[in-house]
Image: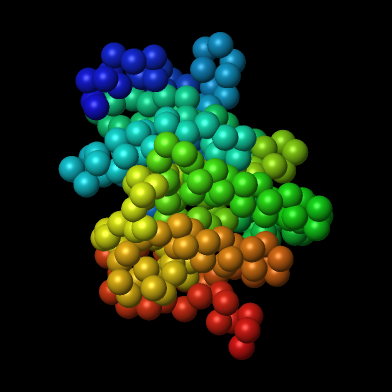
Amino acid sequence: MASALYDSCLNFKYSTLEKATGGFTIANKLGQGGFGTVYKGTLSDGREIAVKRLFFNNKHRVSDFYNEVNIISSVEHKNLVRLLGCSCSGPESLLVYEFLPNKSLDRFLFGKIYRENGKALDWRKRFNIITDTAEGLSYLHENPKVKIIHRDIKASNILLDLKFRAKIADFGLARSFQDDKSHISTAIAGTLGYMAPEYIAHGQLTEKADVYSFGVLMIEIVTGISNNRSKICEYVSESSESLLTQVSG
């Protein structure tokens, strides 16, 4: 896989991406997730890009890197963030995605500065974001070639373009399997509060895990209330309180 990427048109030189991001300066930092930090970059031809810089280069993180490249490069949909390439030959692993100027949904739902400046999402935008996310998930789950489970649907992984149309991002935890299988057994991974209880209990992964996460996300979009347990986790052995409990109590 590494040699194939190195020789392909997907491969960017590390020096090119380092220059595009200004040496990964803090001024170009777009956000940070459980596995990496994302920076805005500008290529020499003027194209704006988003560069994901992974935290670690141990075997587990390298596996996540190739998993994300393999999955996102095999799909294409208007509601999925488009992979432009990667860098796998430099001192660290980098992923290159299309740049979405309105960044992540959580900034608009929960960010105090946006609410104070009158930039809160109106109901039409919220409805469109919900339907866009649903269409992206439907494509992943019903892909005729291979079924893909995202495993980490949440507001910070939904990116917005200039017109506030939504695209699903961050496929580092995603898993794929053939359509003739009902589930796969896997180590539990995801974000507390968005993980389906039956997945946590049994470790059997189906598309229902994404559906549960999407349900929590919908409640966040409608209420503007953030899930208060949003730390990324792996290999979870205990149940987590979900936003559903808070709104139904």
